[in-house]
Image (cartoon, rainbow, N blue to C red):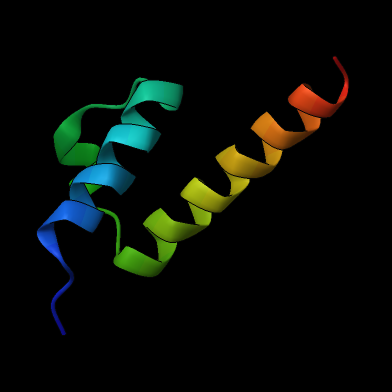
Length: 52
């Protein structure tokens, strides 16, 4: 199965921006694992925004 390149760029950029991980490390993640990190980051951001 392949994923849309634009979606992969979004996921990688999101994780890299928040965790400052190298590109190769993020790309080495399996897609479900990368999506889990995206979800966790979003949850953290939502909690922080609600505290404001």
